[in-house]
Amino acid sequence: MSMMQEFKDFASKGNVVDLAVGVIIGAAFGKIVDSLVADIVMPVIGKIFGGLDFSSYYLGLNGQASGLSLVEAKKAGAVLAYGNFITIALNFLILAFIIFQMVRLFNKMKKDQPAAPVAEVATPEDVVLLREIRDALRK
Image (tube, rainbow, N blue to C red; front, side, top):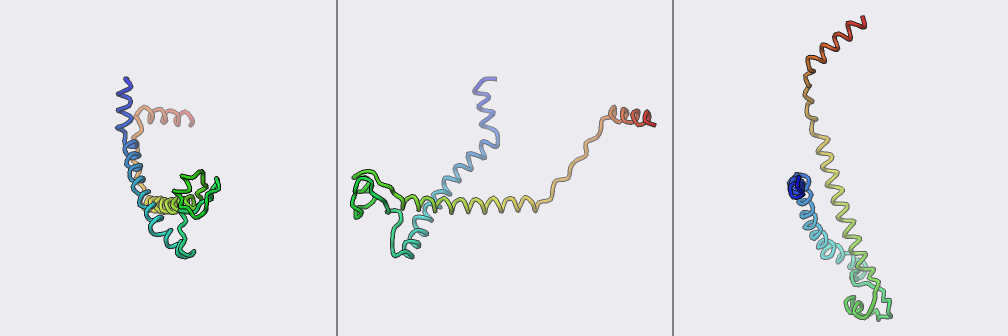
């Protein structure tokens, strides 16, 4: 089998297509969660803590003045942008919680569905005859 044929067989399997769709939807969903965190959650948290914007918090490692914006401080040298890390960590926690809830819901739906009846497989005639001979010899 040629490599192209193997690749075609691999790429045309349902799992690969499902994975690709999942990645695309996940990327789009990640953007929604990014917007939720940056535009809704973090401003509320900032307001609670006195109108602070966490994403602009940094610690200058080259002696940058703390009055500079994060972009200006990065131009001046290395910075430890811990506020941005807090925002991204919160973003991850929200995304992980939503995915956990989705998986939990799907698992619950699977449990509620009745199991498909197992079809009985007919035993071949030669096996039936051998069993009868075995049982007759035991007597």
